[in-house]
Image (cartoon, rainbow, N blue to C red; front, side):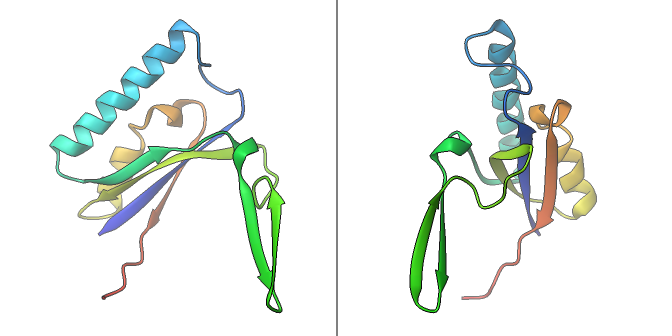
Length: 117
């Protein structure tokens, strides 16, 4: 079963670009990506650009509207994701706990609903 690991953190939380700690964080992500690839559970994943680059689209009564920024104003922002193909939720949670940002943010794990084509 596929699980999406959504990585959330407050803006400015954790190591920041340009610091020695940030290099360690990126190394942690590289090692995590290598682990899930080696273990055969990696389906996909990417980091997202800063929340300031987001645009939200809505359509009501045929009228399309766009707004700068994310859909919801929250303290924690979605910063990236992994999609993992795990045997069960317990295995997905085991991997999610290894995502480096779990140390200063949160990782939401949700089953992916896969529709037959």
